[in-house]
Image (cartoon, rainbow, N blue to C red; front, side, top):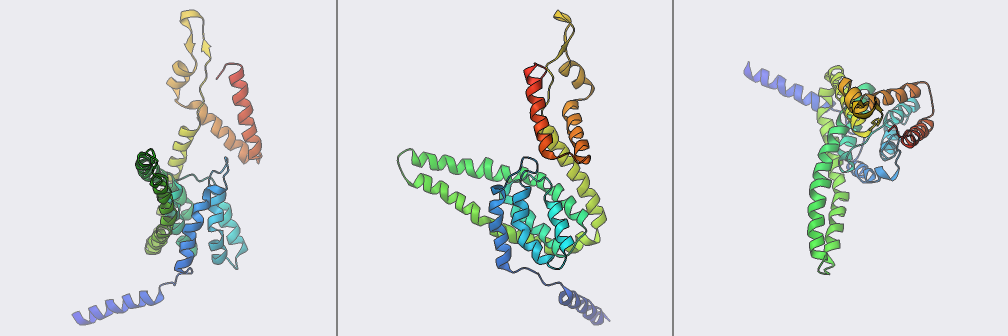
Length: 281
C-alpha cells in the first residue's frame, strides 16, 4: 500500500515536470534584459519619470511574447508607460519577475499591482545599498588613493561602476527565475495578490505625493500681534498637507478630462511663479 502511494506521488511529480511550460527566452536573452536595463535613464520624462526607458528596455521581449497579438502588445506598452521611479540597479530583478508573468499571461491588473507595489520599496533598498553604502565607501577609498597622485584611485572608482553595470545580468536571471518559481502561487491567488498589491501601490503613490509635492502659504490673517499664519496655525491644524493633496487631485481631475499633461506642467510653473511673485507662497 505504501509503495503504491509513493509511486502515485512520483507519477504526479513526473507529470508536473513534463507539463511544465518551457521558457520562451534563452539565458542570453535574459542577460540582454539586464544589459538593456542600464539605459533606463537614457530616456527620461518629468511626467512619467523612468517609464520611457523602462518600456524600451523590455520592448523586444514583449514583442516576442505578443508576436501574434497586436492588442496584447499595445496593452502591455500602455501599462508600462505609466509613472515608475525606483532604484535603477535593481530594475533587472523587477523586470525579470514581471517578464515571467507576461510570458504566462497573468491578469493585467495583477501585473500592474505588483509593479506599483514593488518599485517604491525597491527604491529605498537599492538607494540604501548602492548610493548610500557602496558608492560613498568606494568614493572615499578612491579619493584617498587619488589625492597622492596615484592613478589607481580613479581606476578603482571606475571599476566599481563597471561591476555595477555587469551585475545587472545575474540580477535579471534572479528576477526571472524567482518569477518562474512563484508563478503558480501568483496564479492561484491572483485576486488576493492583486487587491493587496493595489492597496500597497496606492500607499506608495500617496507617500510619493507627500514627498514630492511641497506647497505652503505665507499669508497671515489679522494685524500686528494678533496676526496668525494661515498655513501653520489654521490649515495644518485642520488637515496637514491639504494644499498638495488638493492640487494633485485637481491635476488628476484635469487629466481625466483629457487635458494635455504638458499644459498641466506649464500651469504648475505659472502658478508657482505667480504665487511667489505676489508673496503668497
